[in-house]
Amino acid sequence: MTDRPALRRLGLLTPALATIAVLIGVPLALMFWISLLQKGDSGGVDWASAPSLGNYIRLVWEEDFDGTMIVNTSYLIILLRSVLQAAVTTGLCLLFGLPVALWMAGLSRGQREIMLLLITIPFWTNLLVRNYAWLIILREDGWLSQLVNSLSPVGPVQLLYNDLAVAIGLTYSFLPFMILPLYTVFEKFDWRLLEAAHDLGAPRRRALRRVVIPIAMPGIAAGSLLVFIPCLGAFVTPALLGGGKTLMLGNVIQMQFAASRNWPFGAALSVVLLALMLVVMVAMAIWRNRRVK
Amino acid sequence: MKKTIIGLALAAATALPAFAQDAEKTLYFYNWTDYYPVELLAKFETETGIKVILDGYDSNDTLLAKLQSGGAAYDVIVPSDYVIPGLIKDGLLLKIDTPAMANYVHMKDAFKNPDFDPTQEYTAPYLWGVTGLAYDSAAVGGAEIEQSWKELFDPRPEFVGKIAELDTASDVILAASLYLGIPQCTESNEDAKRILELLEAQKPKLKMYSSDSTVDRMASGEVAMYHVWNGATARATLQRDTIRFIYPKEGTPMFRDNFAVPANAPHPENAKIFINWMMAPENAAAVSNAIAYANAIKSDEFLDPKWRAMDAINMPEDYAPRLVPTMDCGPAARELRDKIWTRLKG
Image 1 (cartoon, each protein chain N blue to C red):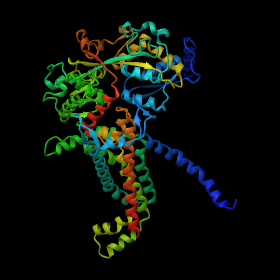
Image 2: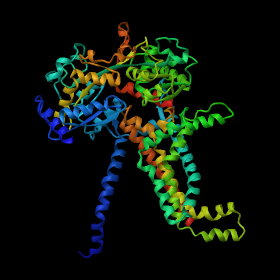
Image 3: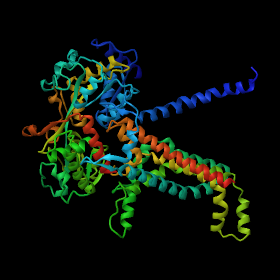
Image 4: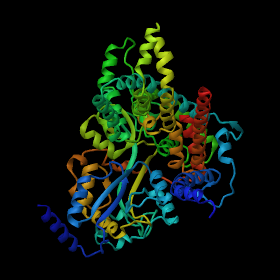
């Protein structure tokens, strides 16, 4: 018992470490292991099968209908589409979230608390219900559709069941995740810096670009991650508002576990999704470290 | 008031000697969405004192995935005919011995001893129906259209852009197979290629793929044609009387849905009470009257006249040869199905 403080620290850390190991480590390890196995005859997993990388190879190479091996572009396209959709959503969230957060930070204390409450209220409702609300707004006899179509110079426009509808639904769903981290940054914002910028002759636009945005960077980074990452795996919104015509990564994974009864391949897709998120997070961390230096 | 209801419920419960109840008066019921009238659950609770908690799924595959994961605990499930042999083989169902139940006498003979569960040790019939084609005759000026899948895969200009497909690979690929004369659950690459080409040509003419809110979408006029079930069509017809139903001549997939009890059911005795209760003619009829699918119980006298007038519920006798039982495809066919679907939507 020479090293008692270290031992005590370990003892105190054990509950946290055990929680992480049991609730995060074990499921992830299980997912990775399953992704190397084969599917069972009527679904599920064949636990006795020899582990192989077959499920990952299938992502890129597959047998065509005439028996030749071809490069399978389906999953690559689905992957790119998911990344693009998530990136567009992140951009839109930033576009709408930044002014809201900035405005909120300038309110009085009481007003700010009311605004925070208003922004979190949608979370009291199920995601599915909120998406259905958009279904009603965007469909042909919905008020938005009728308004747009009465002003449209090119004839009737279909607002629902396309990528635009998915972008609207996702932006709506994830906007609070962008506003809240931005707000925490702006809450501590020293408004005198903005006055100084004006005094030194910076027009509003330049003050925004050179003062506000650099200070908000940690919030922008955190908010973007919080929006981008769950968006990448979203499947309810694309299925509902996208009209099921195109698949996102989340839909393909869901399909493998349900209709296709191919859990190992679904697990492999999940591992790819996880790796993709990891890459984004690491890239973000490196970029931030460089900025700090 | 509350006390009287509880008292009544207790009295009703003790008046049912057939089965011992589980200590906990709860039943977890896992059924297809929109496939059971919730009012009837209140009646069941009043009569037996068992509170039913209803949860919904959208396909047999979802049900299967839940059962295989082992985490879900349900007392009564509603699998379709073709998945039952697999469920029995994998030991996922509990023996309930339906013929020993008091209300078995009410079952129509045609539904006794079905091919998928010959001794009915594991299942009791719930409802049956077909997957066909619904269309709004107003879109074609009240004219009748051909009784063929052609109307769905090669639609008239009036329907283009107003068609909804089911978002279920198995249903869509089965309909395409029937249209092309390809055997169900084909394992041939050549066949798969032809199916994919047909579906790719159809895709731009569709408004959406969706397996939910089918009744609302038709009734509101959001779509003018739907590859959908007959009961859903009948319910939509009540709200929009120009809707018609087609039993395609190339083959109309038929489904027979059944009650069963999962092997890990927490309240198996309550499940048996419920299944027996559902075979009582007035209860079976209450379901058919509410959601417009035919049941397997001698209960026709209770059927609402509004349904008797509809083709979607009462299939003309001479269409019977068109009915095709759905099969459970093997791994190779499922793999091909998955390939078709991913390429179609990728």
